[in-house]
Image (cartoon, rainbow over all chains, first blue to last red; front, side, top):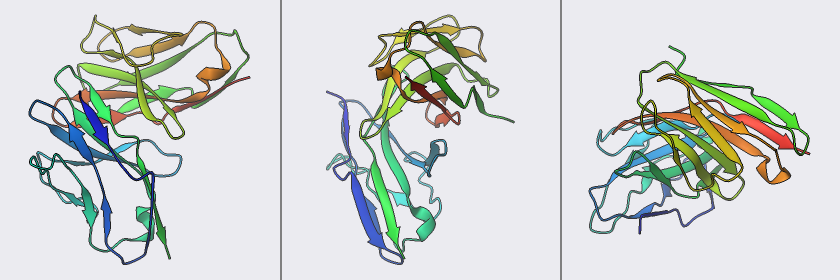
Length: 108
Length: 111
């Protein structure tokens, strides 16, 4: 079955500390994975897509097919990183399968 | 370039009332989607339209109808609103491999 799992509902770290938001997926095909971010009361925005191998706002994510993971990382958290983060898997029939989201809180 | 535009931003309905949420995109995307977002439940797909002229049910279609009016516009209709439909509704369009572009959302309260 196709599934995206974000095991942490809430992650709280201090400013300047490293951040890792976990995402695991289950999919029999070739995965196309994304991270979306939603700042307080704003629309969801695309943060990263694995095919582009970008670094946005200091965040990176590497697809590990062996571990079926696509964890989001940032070496030094900033207060403006506080937001909801969603991992999503694009499947063949034009849909995204979403994780439940992780709320990231950066403490000063 | 406005991206995805949703109206209204806020709405309060009484139980049993009807309303239509409007969505338009100017990116020439083929696929459009309606999601609802509820606390602790992430995003759930209501309906989607893979291309102009087609619509399909998503995970939670009951109580909703949609119309893909043309390539730009995809509306969501609540025929008889219920308190369980209190939610934040997001419209999105998709370019394959590049992810979704979302609208700013409609915060709907049914009392």
